[in-house]
Length: 456
Ligand code: SAH
Ligand code: SF4
Ligand code: F3S
Image (tube, rainbow, N blue to C red; front, side, top):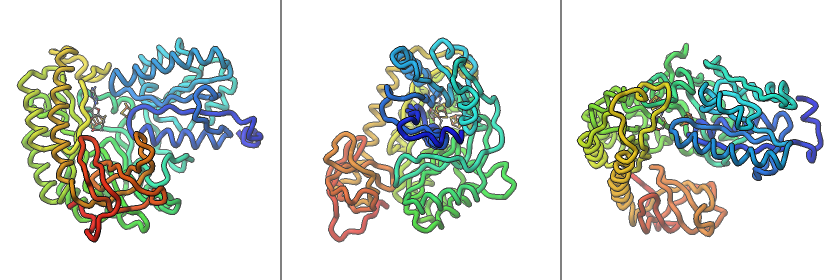
């Protein structure tokens, strides 16, 4: 490893990381980049130039896995033109034995799992020439590993993982199998990490976990998620604090109070309802009813003025009948979700739902998804329209990807705002007057007269 680090820059090997799936993987890719740079690799944005291509994969749905298989086919062809190119696969797919069995034929040289990312330098050293594929995947998580290097993606916002794994075993979900049981990081490590990020110029932090609401369980000190929010809220120089994901079942009054009262905590809760049918919710093992969720949403709206509530929704879960689906549409309208991610149920080997009776056909799932999207998009547009002619506080993230002449940023309620402005305001909090609401974003103009930015 030491020798590698001393090589001149032009001889350094180049890496390229492809990240699929959720923010957990995005954060892990930052650590993988940090580890690779520590042992002498340098990044390249050009896949064809890479000596090492890392695919950080997701297995939450069949389509996510298919994307990776497609990419592996493409990379296998590139490898024939560039025999130096090596391919590593990690992330959630690496944890699944049936996936691993397929990988050898697909030209993968190194496989490591979600629990042993920190071993990457060692694995690279061990399999230096990678003459034989090297597969090292831990079935179960070890102790939480702290102080790993990382190469952060964006200067102004950062993800901070506060807990790993999940104990919920929603019957459709592969995550507890790929990420292991729930483990929380100690508050000290989390706070130190955020203080350091703020020193480096980060102003917005998103706390990550599959269910942040259960943060703290199993730690030796008595601390829960609202306590953690309170501690992070005290960090000077931090402007905004976000978190995802919240399991509705664990949304306690104490947590709602914390969101309401802590000034840096943004008014946005991503608390996926998944389905609006009590029958389906039970089969999903979600642990709440639609009535419970409606009451929760009402409480949140009452206690946290202007709160945005967003959701994930699954259509075509086994046994979902037309009337169950209608209940989901009804729930979406009743709650009035500000935004939702919608999915067709995808059977995952090893989960309980995979072997449930009454699987729904693809055609029916597809039809329901289109219908659901129509209703959800209408809700989102209505919610966004309430912002027209109002002045909101926007954290400017950079140039818009779709229109590089414009800037893009987010409101506290996580709405994307596209507007004209000088590049000098990137990274700043600015008032923007909203001129037009669309389904997925808002358009506006910089400034807003004397009005104080306020979303509440
Ligand atoms: N821990 C988070 C996110 C888990 S994965 C949570 O509990 O909300 C993100 C979303 O993918 C889930 O919320 C769910 O809506 C969806 N999802 C998970 N497994 C799925 C499957 N087998 N088929 C379709 N969608 C699925
Ligand atoms: Fe999956 Fe449920 Fe855990 Fe979310 S809470 S990761 S949906 S098992
Ligand atoms: Fe996918 Fe794993 Fe995240 S399955 S959604 S990358 S936890």
